[in-house]
Amino acid sequence: MTDELQRIQAEITAIMDKLDGAFFIPVDQNKLSVIRTSIIQLLEVAIVYLNKTYSSLTPWQKDHIVDAINALYWDWLHRAVNSIRLAIANPSTISPDIKYKDEITKLTFDDLTKQILLVKKFLK
Picture (cartoon, rainbow, N blue to C red):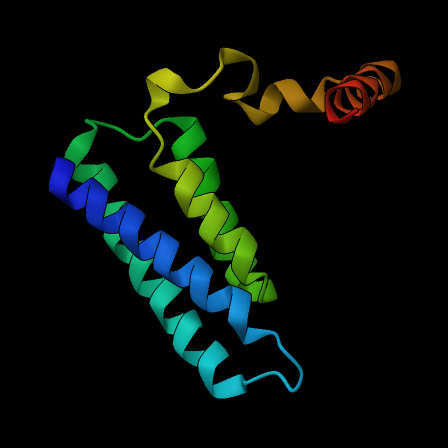
């Protein structure tokens, strides 16, 4: 399983490297088409890996798989790859504060403002 995870992570890195060079002007549509196909294949491999590794997928994993699928529909290729990266992350290493989107829907305006201020402080 570790080898399979390492192959998936290596493929993520390779796709991100290709994406970084794909958007130079003029944009190479053939290259983007190949990258889209690679991302779809990566998504298939990742879901099979997750199914073999975990007895049932967590809401976190499912959410990021769905996010990757939606990102592909919108042609947000970087987001799709990052969602796959998040989906294969070890659930035990994910902060319980960010595991479930249900918590996000309960945030108030003040909560969101507070989080933005925290990020601003972090970036300074």
